[in-house]
Image (tube, rainbow, N blue to C red; front, side, top):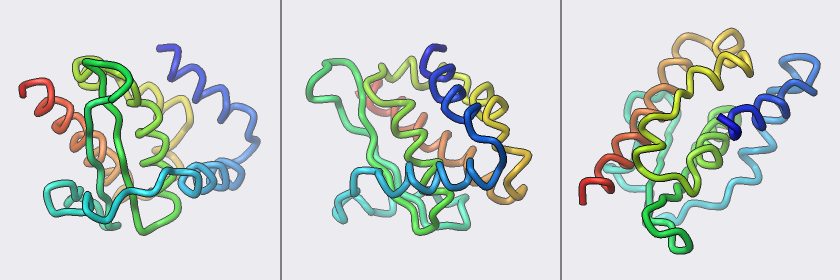
Length: 139
């Protein structure tokens, strides 16, 4: 749970939702660009209103671990994608599957500041990333 504590503490320094929104936007802007070749239908999160792609890859520096790439066409959701890409980086597929992101989302008060539609989309991103981790675990 250390990574969740670390992320939550970053958000604790921000006084209001506007500052949190800005921080998420900055995380999205800092996200490593996703190669266009990875923006394929299999990597698209279809339950999102925004165009979102995520892709799991074996971590070249840590055998048995994964890294993710992601992109989105809206700033706030791209920030959430960046948050998840960083949270799941260098973890085993089983760790990714087991990680309770609800704890993180509650601690940073994400649900109370996003529309229900965006909330559903964010969980669709998590589920897509978990499904990709599961597929790589099984291969």
